[in-house]
Image (cartoon, rainbow over all chains, first blue to last red):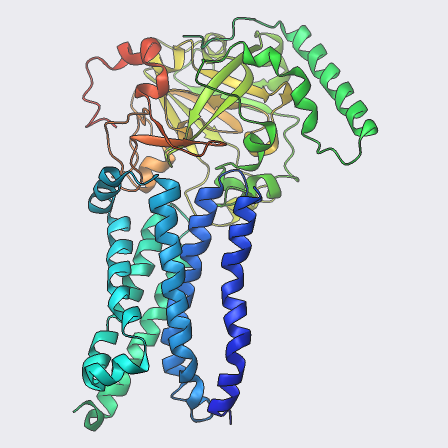
Length: 201
Length: 305
């Protein structure tokens, strides 16, 4: 049985572990150690990290159904906010480093290219999620409304995995694995609702 | 525009130069053990730089040989460099068949003894919107076509990459339908810009770049420049090509570099030159408009992309 305290104690370590890749990539970028196309590499790494963190937040909710892991839910907010942090870095790399703030070009890119459209909408949906991730906000909005807002994580996850799927040219194994995990996690939630209708009311 | 190698190197001189470079590599390595194995190329850059456009700078040997799309060795850019060590590019033969006087199989050495190896510095523009400037050594495809003696009914040329899953780990997975196939219209194949390259930077073609012999069609997206060719077929109908078969809405048979025709994944208006920070504008036909635009004057390039 893991207690809330166990998980809370692990937070500082997790914080550093999840933050570390971004610092490493920034350092490698500045020192020219990200390969011959560093902007592409940076964007890919940040995006992949963000997608993985989004999937982990979904997993945490599922894992918390297991009795002994119930308290794992206390880690969800931090990891969710880190997902947003990596999405922001990913998006700003695209805007600033990749396209040098050429807004006309970027807007065209977002409209015309489905995979960028998916990624951009996913980013937009994450903004209300991240900005309501405080205890105070839960109180102000009321738990029901807050929860409704946070259902946005489902379209966020689906769009983010589609963003990756469409981007890959030939070997789609990795994006398919992520999509599969997301679908399984969502199916589990639907199943739970259907088998316990009294909780849905 | 300075595009063609102005200095034509006879095959013998070419071989000697290679020996010289190998020698200088050895001495560099003796002098400083810590120097990267690529450093020796810096000494003979002048051979190539005089064939450059004023806005272009040669990419380094390291950039050209560690960042490759060659799915036969894996789908990541670093895979061809990391996974191509077991590939054996010699001995090598090329099978010539289809609409030719006499189907036959040529030994690569025999082909090389009948052609003139030249330096060609070309821009390479990938469909993924990045580009490089590469000093190739090779010969005009038209020379081999003359040796092959195609019939007048031959309108297209198809190329096939070697299939050796035991040496090319990427082929063990069906990411695309192996073997890789490409094709050109006969007039494109005969254009003086189109070469079969056998080396770069004065070295034998590295495995990851398509050893021992590959196509280079500088006005088309990189995927047209098929690597490690074992078969050349002459046909009267437009051949199937690998990427077009896989995703016809994305890749066409022509695949000419064209900033005005959009691709669903990448804007083709700009590109990142490897080694540069800011993107640059993509040029029509990758800057070879003067040499090749006439080939397409009756073609709607938005339809035949």
